[in-house]
Amino acid sequence: MPLPYRYLTSMMARYNGASVLIDCGEGTQMAIRKKGWSMNPIELILITHFHGDHISGIGGLLLSMGNAERKEPVTIVGPKGLERVVRSLLVIAPDLPFELHFKELEDDVETFEACGMKITAFRVRHNVICYGYRLDVSRAGRFHPELARENDVPMKFWSRLQKGETIEEDGRVFTPDLVLGEARKGLSVTYCTDTRPVQRIVEMAAGVDLFICEGMYGGHENDAKAREKKHMTFLEAAELAKEAQPKQMWLTHYSPSIAKPDPYLDETRAIFPETHLGRDGKELDLLFEEEEEES
Image (cartoon, rainbow, N blue to C red; front, side, top):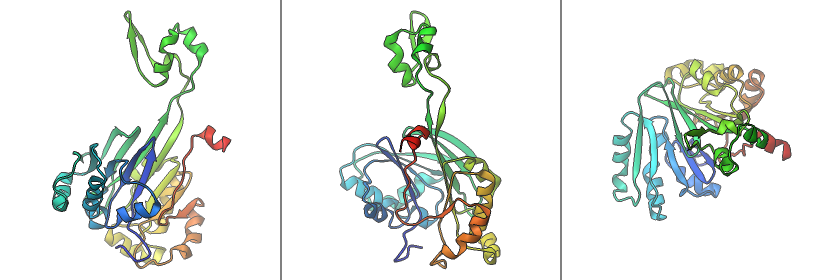
C-alpha cells in the first residue's frame, strides 16, 4: 500500500530518448514528477499483474500524458486480459490524444523488441498470473576497416552496415558481420516482483548488470507468511541472486510492516554480498564496459 513516506513499487528505464515503465500503481506519476523526470517519453508500459498496487495509477498517468499534448502511440504489455482491464480504468480518460497498442502475454516466456531493447517477459508464481521482465541492450562488435577491405565491401556501405543494415547490390548481399568484429557485452536488467522463488528467475537474472527483486518480508520468521501470500523474504531473494550472480541486486516491494528494512541487510548480504536496498528515487547509470573504464 502507498505510505506517507514510501511510494508503490515501479521502475523506469531510459535509453536513447525513450522511457520504459514497469508497473504503475497509485501515485506512480507523482514519484516520476518528484524525481524530476518527464512522463512524455514513456513509449512502453510493462505490467507485471493486475493487483491494484501495480496498475491502478495507469489511468491518471495516461491522462497526464494526454494533457501534455502527447501524440505518439503508447504500447502496454501485460498478462492476458490486459486491454479489458486498462480500458476499464480509462473511464476517467476516454479521449486520449494518442493511440494505445496492447500486447497480451500468454506463453511462459515471450521475447520482443521495443525502444531499442530486447525485452523478455517470463511467468513467475504469484496468486494471480504474474510476469517478470528482462531488458537487454545489445552492442555490436567494433568496426574493422581492414575486415571490410578484406571482404571487398564498398566504402559507401560501411556506415550503414555498422548500424546493422543488410544491403543488396548487383546480386551480392552485404551483412554487418563483413565489417564488424564479435558482438560486445551489452547491458541487462531483470525485474521481478510478487512471486515465490522459481528457477526461471535465476535463469532470467543470470549475470545481469542489475537484478531488482521483491523483498516483501525480512527474515525466516516470515517464511510461512511468504509462502501463504506467494511472496519472498529478503533471504529467499538473496538465494536466487547467489545462484544467478548478477552484478548487484536491489530489494524492493517491502511489506508495510517493514518500516526500516536495514536491520535485515547484514543477514541477507551474508548470502549475496552485493545486495542493496531499493528506495524511492534510487537510480543507476549503466555504462558499456569501455565507458565504465573511461569514467
